Amino acid sequence: MGQRVLVLNASYEPLQLISVRRAVVLLLQEKAELVEAAEAQLRARAISFDVPLVIRLVRYIRIPRKLKLPCSRRGVFARDRETCQYCGTQPGRTQLTMDHVLPRSQGGVTTWDNVVTACRDCNHRKGGRTPEQAHMVLLSTPRQPQYMAFALLGELERHDVWRKYAFG
Image (cartoon, rainbow, N blue to C red; front, side, top):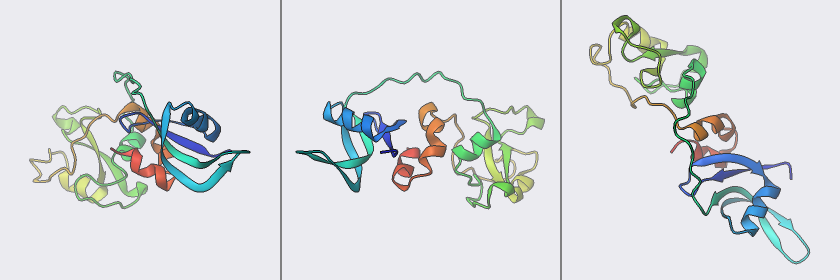
């Protein structure tokens, strides 16, 4: 029973990790529904349940969106899944850099909307230019990650079943 269960909002957005016991209580109270379960079962005298891995709340829980997450190298790498946003390679964390889309030399600042993960080769090729000036294309537009999903990101990556809920 030391296992954890991923709780999704009614919109399938990850909210938190809870104990199996708490998840079963939410299921019995019909406040949540089972989305994914393990093959194992919990047995009581007259009833048995699949061990929940992912549950979804029946009612939507409003989450404050104005929470500011600090922009950090580690956070940018996590948001971009440790993938170069120019060539799509995943060379490993030691070979990645944080690149300013609008370079600091041109007035760019370190914000979620202006930094991306880049491999050393692409960052060197781009230099102090914008992607347009360097004739390079970004694979995705940088943006601030959603707070709850981002806060759980490291945990969600640890379990194969949860991983698909980490990025929406």
